[in-house]
Length: 444
Image (cartoon, rainbow, N blue to C red; front, side, top):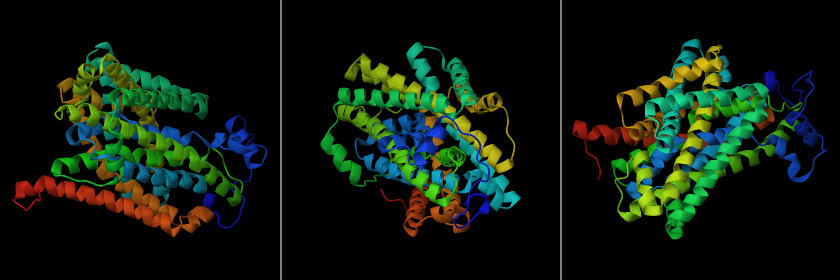
């Protein structure tokens, strides 16, 4: 438990005076709130985390996967979303039980060379993440207003910085903006579902029946997992819960954790449904109409209008803009947590926002294909993903750190299985990429 305590001990000697959400949470813990009202103070952290699961990288991989392979890869989204629920639940529990986030615990429990290596890897991860998010919002601004991509990236930077300034007013205003943007994305895909009229029988079948074709489908499967199970929000989620509602005993910690589970299930479930809608919209609209070559977001936007009408294109671009702005904001928050946790220092938000903009500005300036860049960035994230997953398993299975919130054996084994799936897909991707170059056998 917190501060290394074990057994049923007080987690904090002096609890500061609380107001707002913390006061409401304390009232719920003391039994003064009943029914659904007692859950409300504990909702929020997972909705911030879930933004990363519906970021522009998901648009890129899901549109390409759906247009190329129809409904066949829906099962990958379902699998990835179940992984996400497990990982984010463990991350939330880690921050609650220990009072420290995953990066801080890594700093405390690993040797300095290892810590610095982990930090460098995570910074590469953060740059890959921000590249996808920044490009997505910039593409949306370009599509909606005709502003050149290079200038759109600058507008995106200013907009996300303004959203981040809400943190000065506490966590609820920022949560409200993020949740509102998630709501916009969800509504947009309800509209897209109505317009595209997908085959529900195919959706039901392919959501549960695994399928893998050749090398290209494996690439998209790895990309979908990389775009869905996001390593940076595994670090972020543990920081969002570490000081939000501080438990005074292990009994309170267990109660807070139980009441936090609906937050994860609702938020990640919503993100999963949106991801499925992205893919089956592409399958029903592009693949079904012989448009399997719709390989980027711009083409998707241009192709939607003649197939489904101008409303579909407009709604698509609005959802992409909401996704890019919200996820880029969350990505910057995660970057701050990672830097401070691993190496103990921070930089001003405006400076981090400026630095993490640079890769996106470079892509726009030299004219690289934005969607292909998004897909590659998601594959990079999939290769980085085992690092936070494995370290989180190591910490959450330790009773001396977690107290009574220590993983049950089933939880640990399920998390290990997730890591094994991710690593296996990554190994297969490497093999299928390099085998033809080396003259090795490769199944067709």
